[in-house]
Image 1: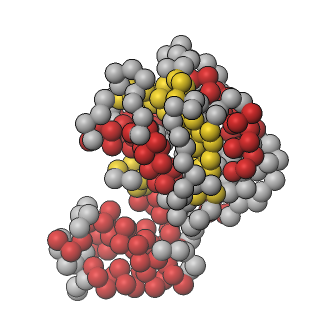
Image 2: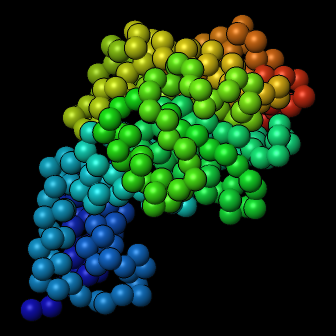
Amino acid sequence: MRFLISACIARAAADIETAGVPGARACAREIARVVTGIEELALGPREFSASQLSRFNQMVKEVIQGLPLQLVTGRMHLRHLTFKSSPGVFIVRPETEVVIGAAMEALLAKEPFSQVYRIVDLCTGSGAIAACLASELKNLGYKAEVYAVEIDRAAIGLAKENFAALAPNVQLLEGDAREPFTQLKDESFDLVISNPPYIPNSRLLPENVANYDPELALYGGSEDGLAIPLSLVNRAYELLTPGGILVMEHDDTQGKDLVNYSLRQGFVEAATGVDLNGRDRYLLACKKTNMTVSVTSGMR
């Protein structure tokens, strides 16, 4: 009996779409890639083996039942990298692609304070942001020292694996990102970046988020979700060099509050960046006037 991959993908996509899971065809194709071990399906065999088909059908069933695709496949993608994912650790979202892009653009618009760009990712989770920055800067020929800070044990374990595989020079520090570390000297970093917990405590989340992403990585510690982000603004100000940049992802309701708070805390310029859907998504703030944070396309 023949098990044409294209036909199996089409059937699975229809079933996934009927179940109300977004991006059904992309889900089915991603599962096929994992099952076959071939990223470019058009260049591989046309048919599943019987064992591959069994695994494919089981993974499709799990997605239909509501398990996030990244936990079904054991991997997740961000920018140009593919990361390992695991239960109990925050799953990276497409919105973070824009945040990393904004950080890269702002960073490369300035000269490093010393001989290399010094970067710290606060609340690194799986390590995806830090690894992307380290990899992209290396590929562009820039020298960088990249640190990542995380408190959750499960996330620390996964970040170690992802760094070992994709960005072995990233230095992972274990502890509360709001607290000082001897390895992180004040006024020595060109960029502080963070995707912290920021969801308002009172917000009800969809089951596919609430049931699988850890609360520690989601909720911002207050009714407005800003307790942790505001404390990280303070920590970032301490860590940044003159002219240093803070880029922080946030909820689409928090842009104005974070801009105003940053300015009150001593940042001389601050603006809100939007994601691909036009929603307020990240804070970009500068510690000193020798860099201009332009409120142009993608910023307000």
